[in-house]
Image (cartoon, rainbow, N blue to C red; front, side, top):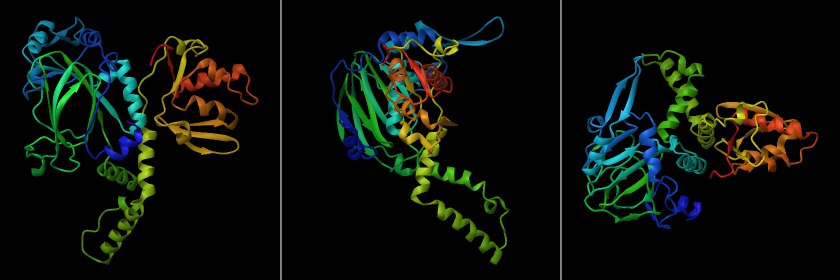
Length: 393
């Protein structure tokens, strides 16, 4: 499915089921990686938890999460493997929150989705073995892309009772469980399911190992826009003044002044300004690049890949450009570069990833090879580029 078809026909409008080759996702999260997460990380609730027949939470997790103190009094968390396996054998679903923070392949997919959707992404993994559902019929307060990694799972998808519900939105319209599904089917390994925010759904394992990853897309709403406007109002003395409590011409004048300011902000350019500012404020996921970043040269071998951490391509990231300099805003920072750097910046920050040797061959008038290397080193140390091994995705 093309991006255009997805955004035109489905994005925020209706669910879609996309079939795919059975093995196309199996390398994203192998079972040995799941074992590694459970064995090698200091996981706490709700990072790791279980659910069975709608029951979940810290009480359901207490049986297999142990707390131990070191001789220095530090509290460490450890999974009781025997207790966890027993729970899973009895039909519980294993849930790993924010698996994109622990598995590089999932993180790279999440980064790609953040670039496409321009919204924050979190990926959770769900593994089951029996025939008991993890959660009851429910809806989520964010859009979801379900990627079936291994095995299969039975799904029922219902429409939304309440348009665009928010977190903890327990309005009476949104507590009545729908009676009939609009789609029932089996999600096979290699399939993808998209669910808009507020759409009711339930998933049930089919008696064999199954693992899917849900990419939650937290779309910004009018409520977020209002919060941003409120932050803008703090700069206006009209909103910092005390309210006139007595009905009078002075009170009317005060309200009129505030209303005019807000009315001027409720124009299309303000929405773009808000979304651009949210994008500029967003921080990159941590990229360390050891050992190369700590060495004096600051650069990896020439065959290594450099890729930008900016959430948008270079041409959409420029804040200002003149005959002498380029100003870029992003990652909650501001950079100014000499105009001569433009050919290298345009390619290095285009979001695709390029071998260091390719970037070193870009002709830049008046900048020799050592200076070009220094520029790329600066981009890495400033967090605008990160280092990828040639074999990484």
